[in-house]
Length: 395
Length: 168
Ligand SMILES: Cc1cc2nc3c(=O)[nH]c(=O)nc-3n(C[C@H](O)[C@H](O)[C@H](O)COP(=O)(O)OP(=O)(O)OC[C@H]3O[C@@H](n4cnc5c(N)ncnc54)[C@H](O)[C@@H]3O)c2cc1C
Image (cartoon, rainbow over all chains, first blue to last red; front, side, top):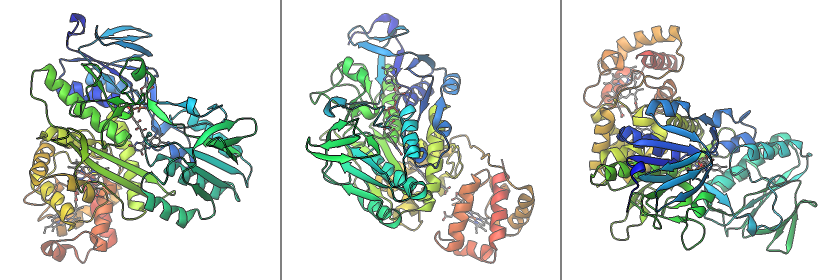
C-alpha cells in the first residue's frame, strides 16, 4: 500500500468510546514516537454499560458514567480533536472531518453502531426512545417511566441478534421491572423479542425474574416489531399483531457506525465490517483497522469489554508493523456484568484466540461461562469493573 | 504464541492499566509476588480457591501463559489504594499484625516470601471480602496460618484490613 508522506508515522483513531480511547492510549504507551490523533464528535463520552441502572433508578444521573478526554490526552500525548468524521480517502490515506483533513499511515475505526430504522416503519426515537446510545435518549426513557401512571404498560422491543450487548435488553427488562415494582404498583412490562429465545444468560435471567418480578414481566419470544403507530402508542408485530403501551422502548436492529458505510468498510451483508482476525485490518481497505461493535470479530460478542480488548490487540500489532517487528498472536477477553436487582448481578466471561487453521476468532474451550447464581459479591465487583474500565479509558 | 503483554493487557479492563486497580473492590495486581500469583491462578483453575469470574477466566490460559502474566504484573509499579481508613482501627490492626501476621506477611505486608502475597496498599474492600471468605471457610487457610489466626474475632480481622490498606 502507498502511504502519503504527510501521514508518515501518524495514526488517526476515529471514535472516543470503548474501543477508540484504548487504541489511542495503547499505541502511545507502546511507541511514543507515533503521532496519535483521536477524533470524536463530542467533548465527552457517556457509557452505555451501567446506563440501565440509571433507568432503573439506582443512579441519580449519568455523571458517574461520563468521561472527558483531557487527562487521557495529557498523560499520553494524544491529540484529541472534537470533530465529525465525514469520510476516509483510503487510497490517499486521509481522514476527512468537519475540522479538516488528517493524513495517516494507519487508521483505526471504532464508531460503534447505527440503527436500521428503515426496518421499523414510522419509527421516531423522540416518542419511542431506543436508549441504546447513552445520553439524552437514556434520560428521555427514564422521564417517560417516571411520568407513567401506576398500572401502566411498558413495551420493550428487542431486535434479532447480532446487536450491541447481547445481555443488555434482558438487564434493561430487569431494571425496568424493578422500577415498576417499587414506584408504579400494578404496572407491567411486555417484552417483544424478535429472537426465538433469550439470547444471553437465559437461566439466570429467568431465575431472577421469577425471584423478583413474578407477574410484572410478560416475556414473548419470536415477536418482531416491524411498524409503529406513534399517535396511538402501538407497535405492530410482523405487520399484523398489535400491542399497546404507555411507554414504548424500541431497540432497533443495528449495523456498523455510519462512517464505516461511507468509508466502504462494510462487507457483503451490508451491515458489519469484515476484518483480519489478528490485527483487525479491514478486508476492504489496507491500513484501516475496524474494532468494537462495527467489526465482525468472530465469536466475540459486541460489548465494551470486547472493544477494549480488541483495541489492545489492534494497537499492539499496528506498533509492531510500523516498526517492522513481528506481530503477536491475539488474545482477548470479554466479560459482561448484568444487574438483576439493586444488589444482585451475574456475569458472562470468555477468553478468545485465533484458530490456527480457520484463522477465525474463537473462544478458548472451557473459558466461556456464566455465574452459578445471582450474586451480591458480583454486584460489588461489577461496580469496580465500571470504575476501572472508565478510568482506563480516560487517564 | 501471544506475548506476555498482549495476554496481560486483556486483564486491565477489570484490574486497571498494568494491574493498578482504581478500586474500590477490584484487587491490584501490579507488583504482586510472582509465586503467589501463579499459585492463586492454579487454585482458581483447580477450584481449590473459590472466586467469581476468575475461576472461569483462568480456564482460558495454559500454565506457561499464567507464568508469563505473573512475570508481567510482578514487574509493574505497585499502586496504593485510596479509600479512607479508620486511624483507630489501623492502630488496633497493627497489634493484630504484630501478634498474628508478621511472621509471614513481612514488613507490614509490603514484602513477600514464598507463596505469601503483597497485601500492603491493597484495596480495603477487597481485603474485607477476602478476609470474610477466610472466616466463612469459603477460601481455604493453610494449617500453618490457621494456627495463628483461628482465634481472631471479626473485629480483629477488620482492624487488620484497615492496617494493611493503610500501608503505602
Ligand atoms: C444498555 C447497554 C448496556 C451495556 N452494557 C454493557 C456492559 O455491561 N458491558 C459491556 O462490556 N458492554 C456493554 N454494552 C455494550 C457497549 O456499550 C458497546 O459494545 C461499546 O460501547 C462498543 O464500543 P465502540 O468503541 O465500538 O463504540 P462506542 O463506545 O459507542 O464509541 C463510538 C464513539 O465514536 C463516536 N463517533 C461515531 N461516529 C463518529 C464520526 N463520524 N465522527 C466522530 N465521532 C464519531 C461516537 O460519538 C462514540 O463516542 C452495553 C450497551 C448498552 C446499549
